[in-house]
Length: 491
Image (cartoon, rainbow, N blue to C red; front, top):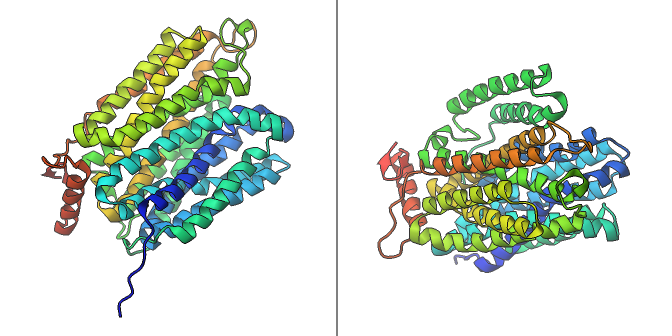
């Protein structure tokens, strides 16, 4: 007698994935507006406390593609639970930390949880009805921005009422519930990619990412032309070249370089890099602008809580447009939605440059920014998932998320250098530093819109308009034939 596994309804799976992704995205932003509080509590200084963010960024950059690959090999549900458990363990250690070293170790452990994003996308691809995949991916992508925005809003009240340790206790509770729910409710995927981890490639990947992100994150302190920064950037370039060579020659690569040469993949990754530059820099510096006292000639002297509320419309707009993005993609194509999202986001940044003297203007600008983010992130995820065969979903989406993280590090570091280049009479950054910085971010989004035009158009089904299904059939056919397709033509 054949036993048929009873699989959970895809809506149940989606609810569990949502809980895990929200907790992960909260941890990306909860710490940002309260670094001065953590600095005082751990008796450290401004330079060293930034490692609370840098350590998390480095760890996530390294672990995200590795967990995506492990999920493709051993089971996405299993590795999703591992990622949630790592996030929970890191939260527990961070909540109990009494010095900076323990806090940094805790954030490194949390970074392992970066794998929740590619794993969630892979689970959706494997378990959901095909017509529901674009909408579900769009919703998860929107929740990433929502969680980050909510983190900026709730950080102030949490610290004021409960203390900064509850920035970690609160996500820990959600993560514990989500991990248990994932273990017992999410079905394990039947899609597997046999093989093993290419550890030399993994070490080289770790090496060049560390060598790249470390000088970028520290350049505002060390100086962009300092010997340490230049030496580490040169080392990153060398290690990156070696990594590409090793991966290209490997029988079982960590990152399939043939896949990365597909135009739909590399062009979408370029867009992700530029979006990361713009979005993470805005998350970091818009609250700082709002919290600047009016004595500096600009700013509103807002508290942590008030600055979070002023950018809340950005979060709402991002979520709403992220939900709509999947449906729009089925009608006009994910590529067109991505171009529109990038252009709208650029208009929002340009709006800040031209008008930022009242709270009403800030709210309006935030809404436009959020609309662009919501449209673009969901479309980006759909393009990546649709462009590769099912067994490569985890590693492809993981690399895309990783590239956004790298872009975020670059954007935040460049923005910090521009903003702090010249202090005003009060010792605070001049207003021109912020306007110049946001003008550069608007330029990054304009370039991302141009890069999106390089993504090949996908022919949609004339009856169902189901673009992802057509692209999936092309990718699966390419896998069977042993060739890689770009759009409708062989690479």
